[in-house]
Length: 161
Image (cartoon, rainbow, N blue to C red; front, side):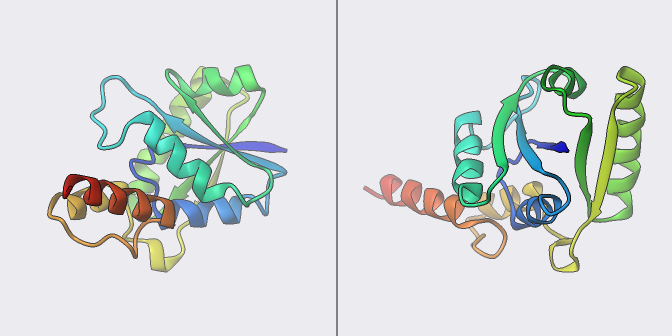
């Protein structure tokens, strides 16, 4: 069975990596779906976010990376993928995810959601937190996968030239 794991991934974190690594043990194929929402301000471009994901998961069989714009259920219907994977860190995540699941189910009755509780060591990780650390020029090496660290290091070196 196929599943998708949608998100902004701005940037991808080790918490996201944990969800992917655990979800792929349950599903035959997992599509990490990078969202592009014209109403949202991103720190990284869609191409950068896609590249981070592709480099992070290149060695994990049956994980594909794709992007989408618009309604999630429309992508799912088009690709004939019924299951959406979502990670939960804290209670407020569940409240938000439950509202989204109900709405998606109303939009497409075949929609199903598969929740994975965050590993405790990633419970405080979020892309928002990483962006805030970056804003204040802090070190994010313990929060994001190597492709993001390498990219930012390269950007910093280019800025210093």
